[in-house]
Image 1 (tube, rainbow, N blue to C red):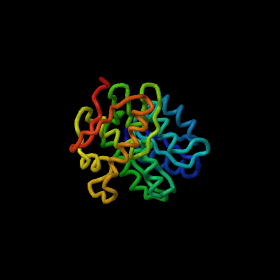
Image 2 (image 1 turned 60 degrees about the horizontal axis):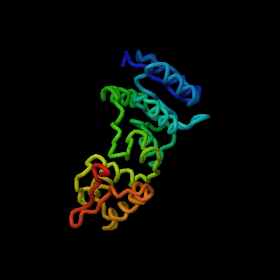
Image 3 (image 1 turned 90 degrees about the vertical axis):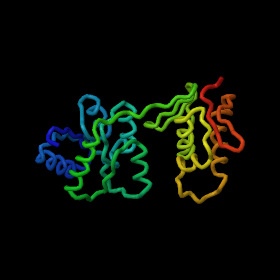
Image 4 (image 1 turned 30 degrees about the horizontal axis):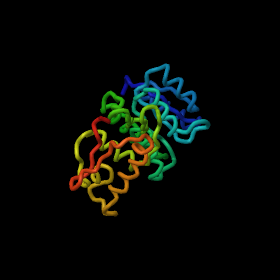
Length: 228
């Protein structure tokens, strides 16, 4: 950790000072930004190994800051530090591109252990953008486009489309789609895949006059590998 450089994004002066002083005592280089805007320009002008982001910032919140960092092509690990400990908050942070989430108040030893774990993961690379014809899905920014048109999808629709786009041209049975977009123990409606495939068609095909998401009777569904 002694060669590590960390950016602490925290608007509470006392908390930022305590974290910075503790990291410096461990031999870690540490800078502090008190706003999301400051953090963005600092991240773009210096190479940081890890970002410690508070969620509640005075301008843009930590979730949005994380999205903007990823959107700017900055892929160093992000550890969220926040008093907000609901499941929804943790999910929002992870979906925004964070790598880990630590709830305040936290033990100093645990913070150091989590930093070491993030560094052990090695270089953080941008997930591959998936493209099938003119349909494009970005797992990092959670965005989908058909040509230049943005398509707004729910979390389940996004997961289902990502499953199709990772295996274009393959016939995927309903059981496989359930495991990927829901989970292996799903006990809900038996026709949930059919319902969500219908939702997807209404968003990625119908408005564009396409028929790329096909039903293969008795087998499942297939996303055409091309529009041809």
